[in-house]
Amino acid sequence: MVTKQIQVTPTSEQDRAIATITAAFSSDPVVRWLYPEARDYLAYFPRVIPPFAGGAFANNSAHVAGTFAGVALWLPPGVGSDDDAMGALLEESIPDERKEEAYGFLGQQVAIHPHEPHWYLPLVGVDPARQGIGVGSALLQHALVRSDADRLPAYLEATSPRNKALYERHGFEEVGVIQFGGSPPMWPMLRKPR
Image (cartoon, rainbow, N blue to C red; front, side, top):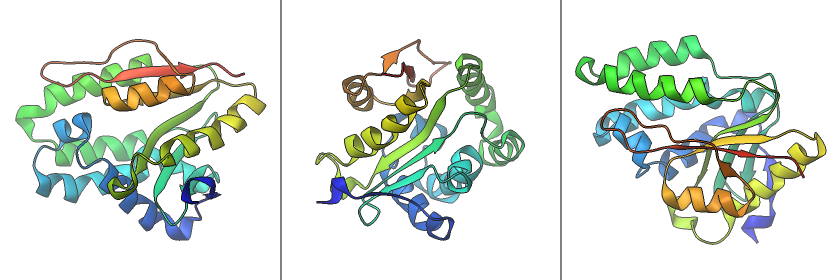
């Protein structure tokens, strides 16, 4: 069964992982608020993934379910996003008239992010053709075993009510709301180790 086959994604398969996440986020409220036009979404979002969450590949904490039915990119304690590359890409990809709102939203995201050691899940996505059969849950359970063994919290941001409910079922608790201007809400969530 696809949901039981969780493996580390090798760097050589990074493009396949990015393709799955890109498909999964095609109707995500927050990402599509940043990139509302399909052309811009397809041009820029796949380029956002490596600086935002690419450290997972280098640290063997990028997980794939089955044959890329789902992907979870976890950043271990002490590993963060490439802020300089992210900043340059956002400067290029966000129209000037939308920058104030976009940067205000992203600034809130940075401000609420925990400072203590933790496992961070910047991106998890399931191919839309395989959603609703437990792939996302399997990816979460697989990684939470590690954060529990490390006795460290896990942190993520839920970008939709549906995802928020999934994360709550796995022990994550809302720690605030990120919203700026006309943005949709995003819920930062923390799960204490068990």
